[in-house]
Length: 475
Image (tube, rainbow, N blue to C red; front, side):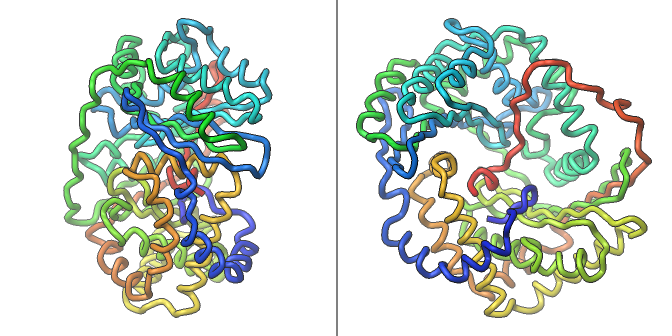
């Protein structure tokens, strides 16, 4: 899958391998998809459980997805989903702060968590013989949330915001560009939240949020590994079935209105070099098959060193240091197809933007060749299939697709990509990659501030937030 944040390494090797294996991979997966081997069950309290045996190595991933992210927040209360994620490591009625992680590590495992716009995920990778440990611990903190040190953890999050956004010009530009592109939908604000909102959040806010969103009816458990599925399903049922639900989570009804005309922002920020972002509103996987064609379009334009934008802007004209393009097709609501690049010294941003416009126009005006289309589809297939080598990636994929509506749709990805035609790519480019649907953000450097002048160092505590998109974890 294409993404704007994390280009895959060794892409050339993957392309060659994909070209050789594409037919075999798609054919074999079409016959026996990953979802076919999953055992699923909905417990009496509404908790959905997916269990998948994978005997490649004596390990297991235990993953709990909560159907809550920054899209469930409200103006004035942004950042609470992410703050709650931090506080989940600050103790329960039974365990003290950080005991969860210490116990996991004592049993040879590792744990972490991340928050996105759409959901929050807690995962443990551990030896198969100790899978009962995270099952017990996760059940405890779903039922017995009782964090300690709220003030200090909130300070950690505020410092994290300074370091991850306010001191990073490209991230600050991304935040402002998205805020301009979404005027009503909660994708308007960043996952970590606005600073003034984080400052106002209270422990009572967090308890209320936990009671609504961290209940069995709003969660999905996915475990993949070297075990007997029936036995693990029984263990999970014994640990979680007695947990009671809180209030029913309210729906998130906001739909972003159609954009009518180009928007543009400029961000003055301490930086070495100019940069830009362009975002176009596009549909997600729920809306229809256009998402697959957009995936392929992203691959053609900017995924890898042979992609059009990389060749033109990075290698031939040497205008930008790097350029990325793509979108998250598994976001819960329609999102943005983004382009992002950082200028080389002496290059004007407008000149680089004009070159991007030319490549987009080329995609709109002329169909991609058969060879280029097949190469793009091969790369997409390779990333998807090779990404399933680990039990962790398999658990991520199943969890994300289940929250989107049905984990079995994971097996529709490769056929969906395979069906994309050159005419499809041209059609979605004409429909979505147009100026009236575009928001442009330009970073204007104001010089580099002395080290520590903006954010300072960490205030203490362990920062657990990792900014991943659904697309990234699905790789």
